[in-house]
Length: 283
Image 1 (cartoon, helix red, strand yellow):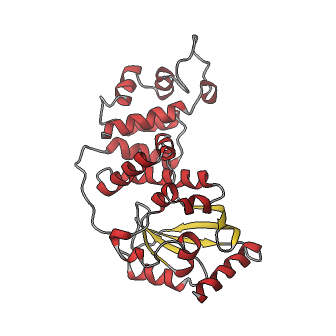
Image 2 (cartoon, helix red, strand yellow; image 1 turned 45 degrees about the horizontal axis):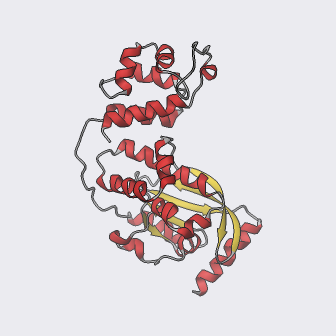
């Protein structure tokens, strides 16, 4: 997919999300052949010519000004993350894919994760590779995998790959689809910032070939960082519990995140997590 193709796909996906009545327009006469706004309706809202917007969506025009991008973002009712993604896509220039260097965990981050002994924690790279985890984080989210795998770059588990291709992870999340959509939306943001990342392109290609559900979510072009959310888990060893996953950004490694998993104080889920911790300590 070319840079201009990514921009066009994003604009079409967001245009399809809106109806004329959503933005205060009277529907144009005649049978509607498209889902959502027509090009001419969006061009009218953004104050640009239909021909210019059509060229932009078809990848035949580049160097859109900040004013035009702001107008399109307003017309499409984009949120802050979507606006940033639009600018990322519009500012890209064709560059060859390259293999990035191996991601490494800063000693301070590793020490933080290790110190959270009673709280599940993981360090994730920008492509959702698991760079490190503590014993409870491993036991809660991937106890069926080799605990030492993150120490070997070639064997590192990947959260996106696990969610779509690993039956254990599909069963772990009661609302698997919501979790999967959140991970895909985050990958979209990363892809907009790093279009030259060959490893990310390879991951997206692999999931696209092996999982139709990933293809559908990727085409939706939702963008959102994995900041924090609450999920119901169905753990094979200790049963069901509700957890909150929060992504913390270490200042010395801004493209990595520390995923911390907590439970409500005094809840049955807290007791369940404590029980898992006891099993982990015994092992």
